[in-house]
Amino acid sequence: VLIVVGLIVARRSSASSLDSFKNVVVTRCETYLKENSDMSGKNDCEIIWGAFEQAYIGKDPCDVPPDAYDPLINSVKQDLACNTMLFWSKTKTMVHAFTDNRDCLVTLEDTLLGFLFDGLTWCSKNESKETFTTDCPSCQNNPVRSFWIRTSANFAANLSCGNVSAMLNGSLEAPFSSTSVFGSVEVKNLDPDKVAGLTVLLVTKDTDTTTCNHSSLNMLQSTLDTKIAYNCRKVPYSTVEGCISDPEIPCSDCL
Ligand code: N1C
Image 1 (cartoon, protein in one colour):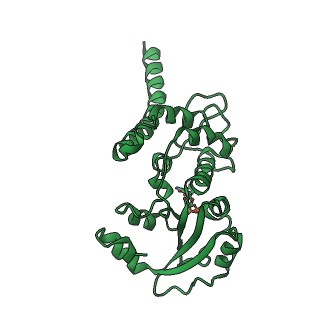
Image 2 (cartoon, protein in one colour):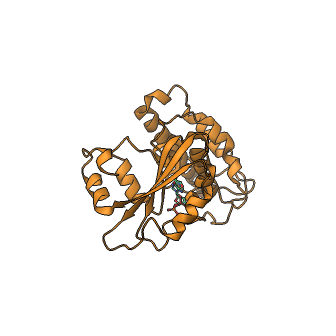
Image 3 (cartoon, protein in one colour):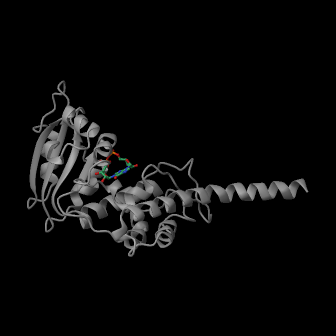
């Protein structure tokens, strides 16, 4: 009897860790579609979950390449208004504090795909049907890293249009890094037939010495397709802080 009870408890607990992960994703999905009702007819949370799962379930957690997520990308239907896309690098917390109360700018995490998986960890194992949410390896082709690479490429290549922006950290030695997701994936995937310009918003504190003339930003400009206009502007950290604490201040007064 004890063995049977033990087996039931073991089965339940392994099933419930998957169930709770799936639950988090599907609940986020339903919440998002409720808030963005124009998308709800075209998107199905169970189909999106199925397309997501098949990218990594049963696979070696170091052998999930970015293109494993192609079916997931294709399962989501979303359009964004041009001129609103905001990229970021090493400014995540500030950027989201800013965009959470405002519709004028949209980050990847404000799109359905980014919203579903932001902050989550997942992997499986060879021939396993399970999803693990802890102890996932940090190798090159791990499921989480490949997901962000693939979704970021899609955000830049297929969703971005008009004049787009990137919020970079002026308190760092080098505000632009060519090995970041922004530098290695997004900048290279902007479509010069759709994107007219990229403006760097260099968020700077009074004590910072980094300017738009920093050599790493010259590198960013030279990586960019010559058909895309490049601009850079310093934005005082205090202005961004003020706009975070008062959502009534119009976007045009913030950036
Ligand atoms: O490597 P980064 O930043 O330059 O990537 C940021 C860049 C943004 O413009 C986003 O569109 O790439 C996109 N992106 C995410 O939206 C995202 N959400 C969460 C990239 N990475 C994202 N993450 C996780 O943060 C992910 O695990 C990745 O490795 C970090 C990147 O943070 P970063 O170095 O500050």
